[in-house]
Structure formats: structure tokens, C-alpha cells
Amino acid sequence: MAPYQYIERPTPFSTKGGQTLPVFAVTPAHIETGTIDPIALDWAGKAGFKAEAGSVLLIPTGDGHLGGALFGLGSNPSENPFLTGKLARTLPAGEWHIETAPLTANRLLLGYGLGAYRFGRYRSEKPIEPTLMIPQDADAADIKRQLAGVYLARDLINTPTNDMGPADLEKAFRALAEHYKAEVSVVVGDGLIERNFPLVHTVGRASAQAPRLLEMRWGKKGHPKVTLVGKGVCFDTGGLDIKGSAGMLLMKKDMGGAANVMGLALMIMDAKLKIDLRVIVPAVENSIAGNAFRPGDIYRSRKGLTVQIDNTDAEGRLILADALAYADEDKPDLLIDMATLTGAARVALGPDLPPFFTDDDDLAEHLVDASLETDDPLWRMPLYKGYEKNIRAQIADLTNAPAGGMAGSITAALFLKRFVDRSTKWVHFDIFGWAPTERPHSPIGGEAQGIRALYRFLRTGLR
Image (cartoon, rainbow, N blue to C red; front, side, top):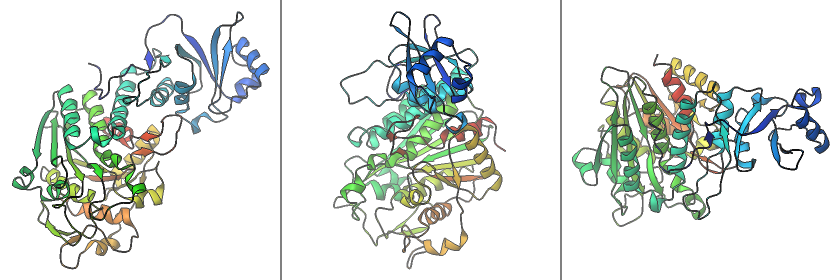
């Protein structure tokens, strides 16, 4: 069974043999020592090709046809492990294979596949893209699985809110579950009040599309219980504390946490990992209407803690609070939440390096190891208890927006931590979910962050 696709697209790979054009992936040392194909070497010399990182030189045949390509890896290929993604955007259409390269087949192909991603749903023209042959020593199934998870996260984030509101996210959630024969349950609208998800209802009640809580279950009882929770704010106006137009421009990506946990769930289910999996997504739109929640309001959460609303633009932690409390009631062995939660995390670490928070040093160590092994960057941040005083409110148990603006990603994590006390292990990821600049392995747009590292960690078994 092929991995699930939200948007059907042709594969960037070819598995058939026959006439494929060669790509000579080389370093400057290969050029200097002449350890490549003589015809390619001669053409490189005539063209002044220096094998700089990401450079491409097409090679003609003697009769003037396209004969192959030289691809520069730079002097230290390990610094750019997914540089081959650039090939997917620079090679002419046709079928290609890597002839020589000082990198593993898996890394070369994963980089190519990541760079081959296109979001063409709203474009009339569908260009013909090059394909790369998968060599026999590559783990084709796992490469395609990881790419499917990344593509799903990117597709969901890139889709504008007019096609990705709470109801649309539910439809995608159900389609993913159906593909892997997982069970789904959904609580919608006023049912959230009846089922004790008051904060999810509060944040989403002003939208034209009703708020909802999505839940998926897959796997066998008795296996380690892993629960994924993703923030699903399909659009964030900021509520009555409305954002400016510039701040609102990318808010279709505020469901990036939901998109990422769905991408991770795809990898887990497709690999048939021995995990009792549960996925929970509170899906809302933070809109403005007469029934929108207000600054100064106080609401009781599922856990019973009361929350004072000091800023309606700090809505993500509210819906996560109910979802985490619900997840925690099942006492999972590992509880993971992912959310596009704070601008403070971007100020601290930028858009490409998501922070994570956990009290479990052993878990943190293994996550860092998995991050390094997969080149999926993560950075541990502290749950500094000295800042817990900042999340206390004057007339409620907690505030959703501490005054002062300092340590914002830490105080947000400390807020979420108040809703988790039964899970064996808990980790919170404050992701950006967006690539603001083009890189070899990703275009500008929605991005998967941390899920390849988490997949690697989960494949090795919970410790």
C-alpha cells in the first residue's frame, strides 16, 4: 500500500532501469584529481566548473544531445546533507541517476525528494519534472514514507483557510485515518461544552465553522501508548486583540502543529510501528463576532483550572490546555504536543530551529541524538520554575498572556505543563511550521519540523 497523499502528485523517483542520464555529484577534489568520467572532466575544465555547493553543469554528448550533468557538493558535503534537493529544481525533465557521490543513497534520495516538493494545487500549469532513479541499496519504502509525512504537513499548511477551515481539516484527518484503517471520533460545536472541552469551544465559537476536537486511534493495546496533540488553529485573526494586516498574512499556518502531528502519524502508521497511537487535534478558527471571547474573561478548563484571558491572541495554549488534559487522562507512556505557539521562540532561535521542552533528561538526550542523526534540527529549552509566578493571574488560577513579554516561549510551555501530570513522559515543541526562504530541500512555504527526528526516535523504541 502506498503512503497516504492529501494531494495526488507523481513520484519524484523512477524505479525502472534503462536509459537514464547520469549525475556526477562531485567535490572540488574530484575535479582537481580527475577522479570522474573523462568526458565530464573535460567539459568541466572547458566550462570552468569548480563544483561549488549546489552548482549544476549540463554535459553534452559528442553529437550535441544532453548527456548528463555535473553537480557540485562543495568541499564539505556533510555541511549540506540535503543539497541534492536543488537537483529537483534545476535538472531538465527526464530520467536521471546518481553516478558518483560521496554520500549515502538514502541521504541523496531523501534530499532530492524533499527538494522536489511543489504546491501546485492552485496553478493552471503543471510542469513536467525530472525523476531520479532509486538505486537498489536505498530503503525506497522508508524514503517514500518520510517524504509522504513531510508532504502532508506542507500541503495542509500551504492550503489557504478558505479550503482548510476546521471542517476541511477534519476531512483530511478522516481521510488519513481511513487510509490506515484507524478509528476516528469527533466532537463538534456545542458538543464540546457537553463533553467538557470548554476552552476549545471558547476560542472557536465566533467562527462560521464550528470548533471541533478530532481524535484518531490506531495500533494494538499493550504496545507503548504514544499520544500526539497538535494545535489546529486554522486561522488566527488574534480575536478582539486583533493582529495587524502584516501579522495576519501567514495565519493560515497556525494549524501547523496539527499538520505536523498528522505527518508524524502517517509515518508511524505506514511503518506499522508497534505503538498504541492516539492523535488529538483541537480544530478552531479564532474569529471576531459578537460572541467572541473577550480580554478579561475567565473560563474554567477541562482540568478545572481557571484561566484569565489577558490577550485573545494567546489562544493556542487555551485549546491545547483542554486537549492535553484529555490526552493526559489516558496516562500515555509518551505525550507529544506540537504547536505554532509563540513569536518568542522565533526571536530566540529563528524560524529553522524549533525549541522543545521536557523535564525528562533522558528523553531530551535521545531526541537531540535523533535530531542530529536525521538532520532535523531541534534545540532543548528550559522549563525554568522561576518563571512559574508569571503565569499566575490576579483573580484566576492562570493567565493566558503573562505581562512583560519576556521568556514568552518558556512561560507558554509552563502554562501547558500545568495540564499534564499523569503521562510518563511529556514533550512540547514550539514550531514555526514555515520556511521563509528557499533552501535546497524546501521551497518557501509550509514546513515539517521535528517529525523526521521524532519518527527516528520512535522507530528505535521507547526507553
